[in-house]
Image (cartoon, rainbow, N blue to C red; front, side, top):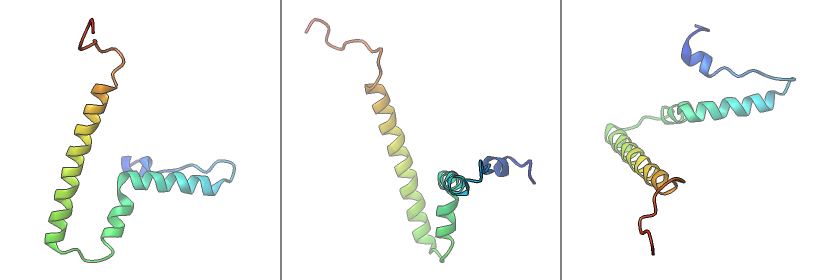
Length: 87
């Protein structure tokens, strides 16, 4: 079990007895993986219609955020040609 990839990815080492910092790092890792949201959602029953709406909203949000990140990366390029040379 200790060699399982998901377990190793969520292992945090405590350095110099600083447990608070390690706990913060672990919380950040768990939040990025979505574990805390899943636990919070599974605390109460979620109706199937609400679950479908939530999943659809999350999918739309992923698409929107990916498209906006693509557009921002396109505009923020450093080595792009001048669209209107000579103006």
